[in-house]
Length: 570
Ligand code: GLY
Image (tube, rainbow, N blue to C red; front, side):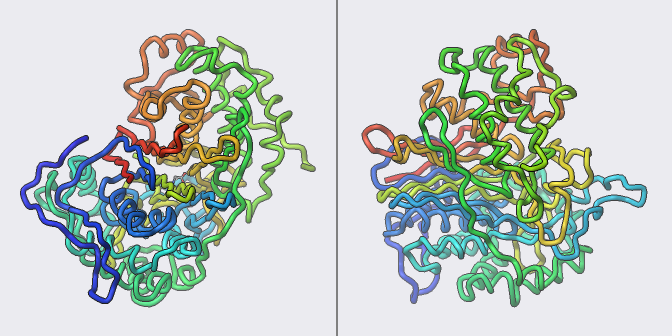
């Protein structure tokens, strides 16, 4: 638990106008604590920012359910966590209603109508560095606001009450943490390069912890959304500001693209693992399918007997990750545009076949492990919120701008960052994206198509009863983090905090090495190296937020130690 050391202290009531319902609880945006673990009876939430988690908690304490909380928390994150919280990006929601119904919502960004498959190539056919990750052309049509309004179908409170905390945080400001100050300071050179007008994030002498960030233009954009609903973003003044920004910066998102954007309800991707039911995100996220592949490939092996971080367990998990990512590169893309062979990819005999060349104690190579053959008939930043309420509604939302601070382009006059999600398409077969991930025809760019994602908002049921709400940011490492956290809990019987915080590892087929966090144990590294694996130490992997329902029915919310992530509950 950490207390921010701040001088100015006063409280804000989260109501914008006297005509709006005044929420009884208060949040102090100038002094707040980070809570890594909370045990709750009535409602629990974990998100990337303490103020956002407090907003979700306050909404539940004021009569809202888990859907109200997740909507208000996403809006708050768009203000207090600009490197990934957003209204200029997209996301996915997986939820289970108190009555047992499971749902999933796709509000992934979409390629603009003027996009085409070679749009990031020069006239020699080479990828132009940075074009799909920085600036106006890297942005897909944002989906978040459409997703929030679709999610309102399951909410109880009026939208104006859910957006009020975000408006207040933007208008009156909040103090930034040390890691936010560092993030904004690192951003300064890109802010100069990729913006056409000056903006609130630019600061000549740099940001420091304890500074107050006030975002008036963003507050006005949020007010237009409050007053006009989704049309306050996709039409009228906000849409005009986005398109004007595109014109100034040679981007291609049009008024028509914005007006036509639709969030889509999807059938969740569900399967069982060692008797537990796993409910995750279907296409256009690869999360559910790859999580299914990885868990089913390890299921025949006695992982618990091998032990946590044992050489046997690590090797097995690395090899299933390698094989799943090889399939992703070849076969996965927006299933509305490409015939993705999902039923084959998760078929148990297909997965058994994929593991036939696995040799215990000896590293495979990615050159030898090709994507599976399908019969013809047949500085990464994202953010995750886990919420559960007293009625048993479980909601997992992962949302993103792609990179940290997305395209680094802020819509002039509207105060929000645009995503650089176009980089999640395959710009050219065989050329890796920013996460080093490969792709081909399945994930080629086409107008109106949604780029392949790795986001894996996931629920786990034990005997049809709520057990885990889980998810994380981390680009391609998202799926391996969710996979490892589930295995850590189910197989290795780790506590929730250990399952979240113990060092993680990652293999994604190419590059052919095992990524490990700095704290990954030396003896485990040595054991893997002896088997022939190349080890690559990298920055921390993921920021996993978990709610686990304990045997006594209480909710244990755990927020990852790797960032300012914070849990709240009551
Ligand atoms: N932009 C990261 C993902 O969707 O996988």
